[in-house]
Image 1 (cartoon, one colour):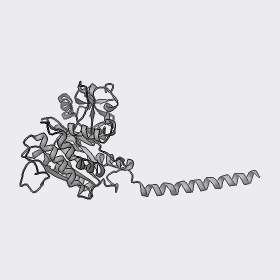
Image 2 (cartoon, rainbow, N blue to C red; image 1 turned 90 degrees about the vertical axis):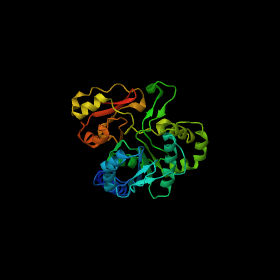
Image 3 (cartoon, one colour; image 1 turned 120 degrees about the vertical axis):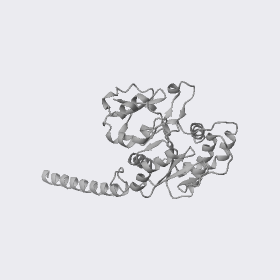
Image 4 (tube, one colour; image 1 turned 90 degrees about the horizontal axis):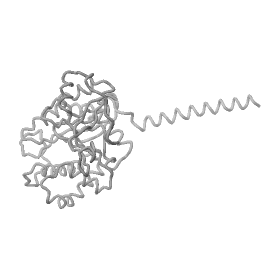
Length: 313
C-alpha cells in the first residue's frame, strides 16, 4: 500500500513539473522579457524632441546623440524633431501654425496639443515629448515602457513630482524638464479637453508644462503619485557634482540624505531613463551615456533643494 502511495506521489510530482514547464513556456511566448540589446521588444513610441531656440542646435545634437540609436535599437519607434518656430529645415516637423502667440510658454502649450493630435493619426502606442536638453537612455526608457505595457495604464506618466516641502510653497507641481509619456487614451483626453484648457488659461501669461500638467491631472482625477516616475530626472545637478563627474571622481560623493518624502527616494544612476540638464552647463546632456555606463552600481541620484545630488546609500 505504501509503495503504491509513493509511486502515486512520484507521478503527481512529475505531472506537476511538466505542467509548470508548459505554463512557463506559454508565458515566455506571450509576455516579452525586459528589453535588452537582443530583445525583440519594441516600445513603438513616437518621441518628439522639441526645439525651443531659433537655431535648434541642441535639438539636432540630441537627435544625433541618442535619437538615431533609439530607432536603430527599436525600428518600430520613431524620433522626430519638432519646433514652435518657422523653419525651412526639412528635418524639422512644424506641428502648430494655428496660433499667433508671442509668449514662448503659450507657444509650447499650443505645440503640445498639436503633437498629441499628430500622434493620434499615427500607429504608435506611446508619445514622449521632451525638451532639447535631455539625454535619453534608449534601453532604460524602453524598459520603463515595457513595465507600462504590463500594467495597461490609461494615463500619463511623467517625471518628478515636486512637493510643497521641497519648494517651500503651499502647493506642489510636476517638473516638466524631462518631459512625459502619454498613451493613446491619455493623448485623446488631452485633445478632447483643448477647449476647456483654452478657456482655463485664457488669462495666464505663462502656461508652462508644470501648470498644464497639474490641471490635466486634476481633470483625470489622478494623484501625483500616479504620474511620478523616478527614472525621469528633472532637477539639474549642482555644479560641484558636475565638476566631480568631469574628473571621474566617483569617490567624491557622500551618503544620500534621508528622503523628504516617498517621491524623493534615490534612484540608481544606471537606471536613469531621461536626464534633463536644465543648466547652461550641458555636461550631463552631452555625456549622459558615459555617466550612466561608467557610474558605480551603487551610485544614486536624489532630488534635494531644487537640485539633484549624486550620492551613495
